[in-house]
Image 1 (cartoon, rainbow, N blue to C red):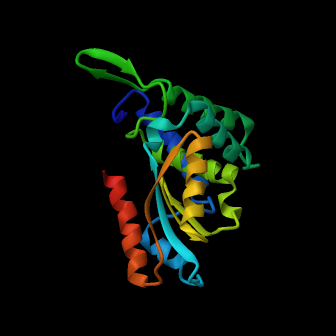
Image 2 (cartoon, rainbow, N blue to C red; image 1 turned 30 degrees about the horizontal axis):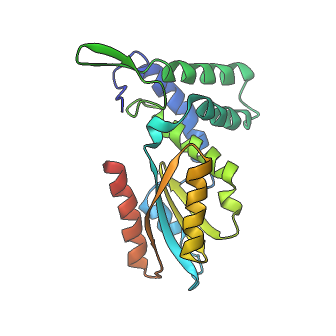
Length: 210
């Protein structure tokens, strides 16, 4: 995992992040913080057949293939009719340059990160968020008949699943078999307690700190 802080691409990364952030907050699955989550759940009607599920996407930052990440960014940029084609091309070219110049040293040797993004570079979080937005769209997660609530905090997903736990595990297995990212269920259970909602999300935040 590469830091990228203070590197030759630091200023460029900060500029790109300023452009990408406005697309991140427009994602239907975007989750800002605990308060945002509780507000989203404020009018949700619970059923006994529902399950709380939190999922961690394993090592997201270092596993995003460059071409897939750029494809996701390109899709979001082109959805904005006000962005000139020249600026869109500049953003994509800049991201490609940043991704392909993540150099670091270890034991007096120089290495290049070949896949994923440096975790410490300024635009990394926005880049990962938009990739996850593209991923959930390609999987049809928002329209899945058994998923009745779906929110994502970078590489952590919280959803409400209706049906058997066995079906949920089969669904997760399908994700891990057919797609480049790997997901791990952190919590799955039934509860209607408002306190439990906070506990579930606090667990997601703690995962991000590891």
